[in-house]
Length: 314
Image (cartoon, rainbow, N blue to C red; front, side, top):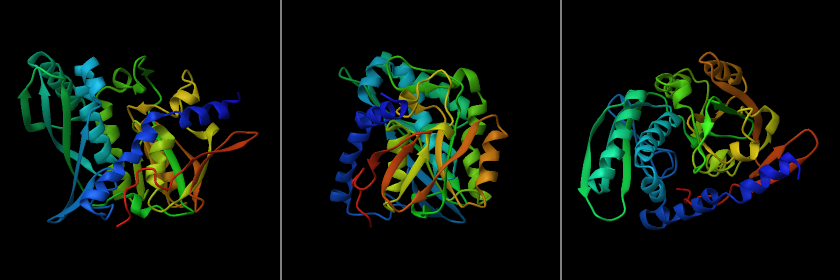
């Protein structure tokens, strides 16, 4: 198989992408939202006085909580600060809900505390229920912004930029690319770069690359407008030691997709590069509704964006 064929096969087999279709239940119960104020984007943008509050939350995959409670605590913080950043916001505070035996609960909270210190976000409250059953963890974040990045702003003709930290290592048991040792406290500065990009009008939409990987996360960014894109895989920032079929289907510690007007793309890329992160324009949004991958010799269609989450258009 060619490298492109291996990436396409890995995307097709990614269970996290298939699982996104179940999100449609939200619209069937709560009725269609506005996408910007929720449900739809990575967080909900709620006008609050002279600013905009960003509210979001994450439930951590139960088998991961069971196998690595400390790591799950770290992931709960990471996922939330990334979601706030993807909306152009700066994280303000976190709360959590933990249901677990005391020993696991302690490890979960220690993981959250460790990550919260790295990202400089206080844990201001939450809820703990002692339990003898399987542990569960959810966490929620509050952020703020004056300029929102939203999938509702994505349009055909905009450039697609991928920004990532490519220093780190992949977990053996879970498709998560860790950069904590390599970036350390700089990660707190990294996630705040998107707020700067939003303030300076250097991008209009963003999505963090999470469990669905690069292609699955991109499909969620493009779904509302039924947009498509052809990605040059040679331009995607990636670690030299990780095969692209794994990189395209992992959850990077720091990885974001942004759409930019063509006259701001270069400046947007420069913001990341100034902080020793990798970023590049990898394609141009179009109205095909299909994500394609391109190598030097071939182009492969890998995913149609329509109905990826099934969230109704309000």
